[in-house]
Length: 177
Image (cartoon, rainbow, N blue to C red; front, side):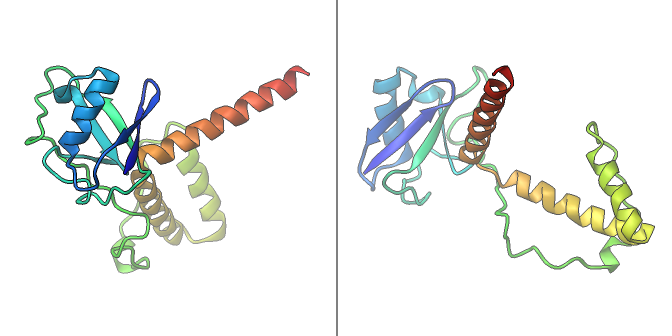
């Protein structure tokens, strides 16, 4: 099968490997292509750090999948045995239940709001709901927002950034003409 590996500060390369191979086998092939030692490579797939000893099938990596290659920081102490896989909660997880009124009775305030977004949303909600209900809605909205943001993969972030950069370049050209 073929895998595509994106080096975040560089280009993309292709690796042809057996579907029964493990992550270490991919890193060995990458070392010959991009000249980065295996012990300095960190592979990411769908937002998860891959462990060298696990098979590609374990991570459900299929033909045509896109992996991201990061460099480990020197002296970080990360080894395949000690590296942790970040937990990524999918946007539609089983624990997403309808808002419980009882669990949201305590007052809710946003302390870190450099853009003022949460304060503006709170003001808007208070126009249409009681202060207590507006706080409940705001709390649940913030919880869902954080969950959705944490579920983004590196691939999602790259697509969003590319689209935004592409749109801003187009707007710049339009303003100049």
